[in-house]
Length: 232
Length: 218
Image (cartoon, rainbow over all chains, first blue to last red; front, side):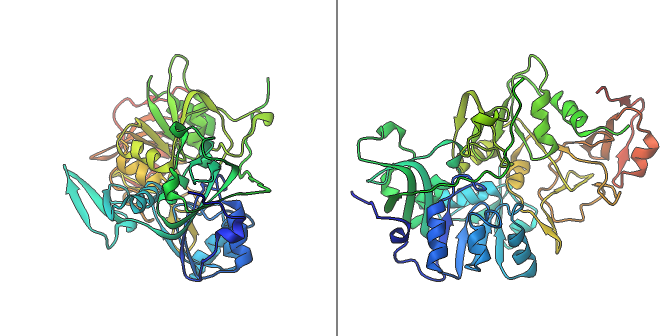
């Protein structure tokens, strides 16, 4: 099924204030740069964003924070974003910090039709407050609920017009689970190819999970910590 | 003399066993990778989706799509594997990773650890630390013995919000190596030239100093 749309702006058709969005990426690695740019241009606000991090002050989801488009953030780590920390501490932004593995599994569960599951992460901490806990084989676990999104914004390396996706290196991270958990899943790819050009054995996300796809442009792929070694 | 960061990393590296899968946290734990003893093969796991993480890249090898959990550019070793975040934490929860080394703000003498939040002041988030400490069989906390204000980080009870309960088995600080047992922190080795008095004075939690504690070889 042909799922190609013209560009990032067209890919966001139907997005409204107050919606819940999943945004792929780990730090600035594997984030949907074109779609984030389109969200800023669109000006949609009151968003609940589910993403492992919140970018940095002037890139990634940090751009949406700066414009005050995000009302609630569900993330595991915010360490690199000063504006995020400021809005969190001042109470302007509602933040639900979630252990990283729990966040990944909640997205996976949302995409797999599993409403809840038990995990040991966070047992005995404030993350478990108000949640059901249960003992299995002598160990305590916390019940966590699935996450689903109105829109999932995904970045892949390669995709075909049927929506089959291939990720590259650690830019994969949360993208595959988030792709599964979107009511409308939009994928931006660096290389858009025709059906048949991706070996079926090499598809990471089957196209059934993807509703709209386009080839992005002008990727900046900013690096947070450029660490190198010297040649001897 | 208290240990410097590289000496701490070197000491932890001696705990590694051949064939282990190891997750190294941000900061000093990352340096452990530089000190893996000869003849020992370990596979480094990075929770953003790598098994078989290699060194930092040469300048002309830097790849924005290839970072570790500390968002540093890295390389892959031959035989490495890439996977998504759910798979990564599946292997962590299912205890396929034999050792987790991570930093902390506070550790208590009952094995509690706090590492992600100072209410009203600082919120970094827990990242993968809660998942790691809840599941790992073998956790070493690697941190300075005192905070910037000179206060002990080895406490009777953590004052900060917890990352995990009763999970820390060992703590390496710049002053010594400790095991966490029913009676509290058991000093196993002290840093070269560091006195028992200094360790006692800087340890707020219950401390056990067995007879004949050895000085650490670094």
